[in-house]
Image (cartoon, rainbow, N blue to C red; front, side, top):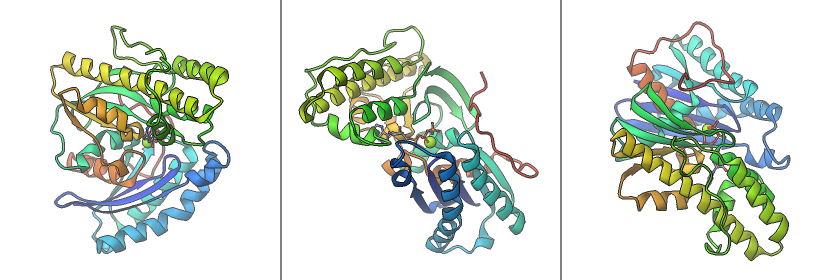
Length: 330
Ligand SMILES: Nc1ncnc2c1ncn2[C@@H]1O[C@H](COP(=O)(O)OP(=O)(O)OP(=O)(O)O)[C@@H](O)[C@H]1O
Ligand SMILES: [Mg+2]
């Protein structure tokens, strides 16, 4: 089955073609980071307008690269939520109307299910069951995954998501938006023993997280100390070490409690090299998405859609979007 995936939930337009027999055939992405960078964050109205401009050319590019004519597409999968309502509507209306025109089904998929399943695009790919650490710009969750749609929430962030904490701290350090990757590069030059920041909720009996205090602690350091490049790098290092420490220890604890061996890490922060290094040193089985599929992309939506179709997903009549939508009902 050939599934065309469309992602437009935030500031990346992603399109991909996934073949259930042969895997990913082609994918294309346009990031709006440069456009929003000027404003220090995502401007929703600009995001929607840009998705409109990009989605059709990207779909044409993906079809051309895969060598498949549009008529051979068996189904469409678009991100239905969560995300920015106007941005989601672009992908949903394009996906649903393309399906209608072709006489093919179109389904809405959950953006976080896309992230969660993205490591399955890599080889070797993890078997179920596993514990997933979902660390993105808007989410930090530990989830027990027994199969597609069989999710149990183990822990969640009580305030800022890990990616959000990276971005806010990066902004304090003058690194622009979104600054997670830039902060990580700066931290690479930092001295790990100069500053020590708190590890929030490290020893709490649950699997929840809290990162807003850490960001505030970093702010105090920046205000009092950050005059030179070396100090900024040392603060970045202390911040990254603290956040990575909490993520690693809680993930390992969750794995032990579930009696499982496999950990899957997904979402933008899973690109962080320090996080990968620390998890790899834990002596557990860990899977990550390829770097290009850590942040938002169409490939993960095409894959999640294909897996949903294989489970017999029924397309809804018309289309809708869900700007707020929990993956796991609490
Ligand atoms: N190397 C890195 N180290 C730390 N953070 C990173 C790195 N690369 C990307 N990020 C962070 O990943 C986040 C973006 O990830 P992603 O695209 O998965 O999030 P999102 O789509 O905005 O949020 P959500 O998926 O929860 O709706 C940003 O916060 C960014 O700073
Ligand atoms: Mg995302």
